[in-house]
Length: 192
Image (cartoon, rainbow, N blue to C red; front, side, top):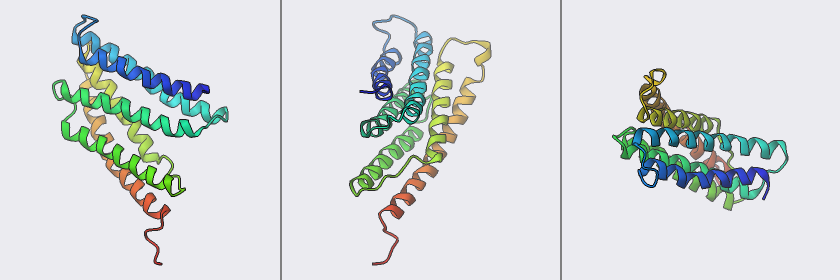
């Protein structure tokens, strides 16, 4: 267990805490607005660990197979949990957008797994990284919109809504990139 993998594990352990704050008022007995604010903070910390674990793994020369497998799974669990909960609360995220984003995640994970079983690595695409950034912005903004009304956050819903639409469009486009890369890596386009 190295530091980058420990950060990934920490992110996974934050997911049930995030879910607990956002999905129930017990045992905290706090109003939803306060729980949403805490959930936004937890999500932000978890998102920072996503960037930090990858950075440290590369800088310290501690990139591992476990990290390559575990990190994207942790990301997908975190963002999928947040999207599902945001659908549940007043449709902060339209259900169909959450389905498109989560469906893309499942499809890309499947493609990468098949490619890996054939000895090919399909690295993260820039479009996928940008999609993740817009998802993070959207989720935090929409959680803040559910929180206590603070003047500086008056446009949180607009920022979140625009960002989730951008994330969804980028999910589709980067998903297509993954399919093309998968097709090329496994040589489906070559004649025998």
